[in-house]
Image 1 (cartoon, helix red, strand yellow):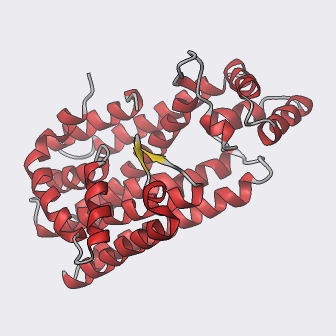
Image 2: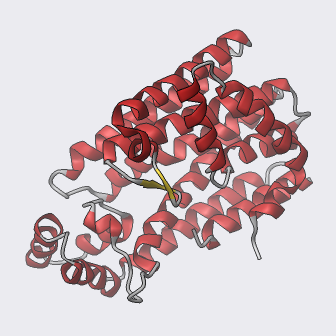
Image 3: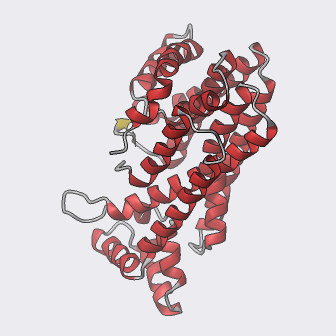
Length: 324
């Protein structure tokens, strides 16, 4: 059984200390800001990103203050982008909780996201962690470009597999990469080790996103059928892209029209889900995910055996087997 608790075990003490430090980084004299920040801390997710920072750092050296700063920079940046994403997507829920924009409206949500990005800058400048800031800033740029590329290409619903991987590399994988590189940088690891971990993070991040794609077509709602949320939102996922690439022109046109014109009708959404299943799109995506997970294992195997490396190997398996 793959569990986050087991993965976190080698850095349990560091994670506990990190939570206290992180709270201090987001505090404010403005009561509204503090109120929103407390809410956000309470609804924290799996904390994969800081766990990755500490595992990679500890695998290569001794965790130090720079490691805590790096983990905080990434968590601040990531949380800010999620807040802004919810505004862009007009989303009311995030990780099973009401989103900031749902509770405090868009204006406050945007400003909270801006506040957290300002904390990234000030924390890095105050601690003179300019190299770590550089890595985190490159990730923000890449994630923004990836989102805009997806919007640009999604209008015609004609995203190719090549473009899909470009998008998820910029939107998802780059953040996992950054966690690994920041962890390595924070303990003074060699450039060679940093590059090896960057490649590891990329492979893990690509697999992570493909697994999310599969969730939408594998998870069922109370009717016992897949939710099809990505289809309703006209998102081009790998299973759908592969299924469309193997369809004839008439079928492809029909499916694209259904997604564009009838994505609010459950019966029509189910027709698209069935098409993807019957066309082998799910199986193709699973094979691609396993390929990237295996690449990640191979890259990680270059490092000496340790409790931290074992935890990262556990994380690879968890990524492919996770249920949410």
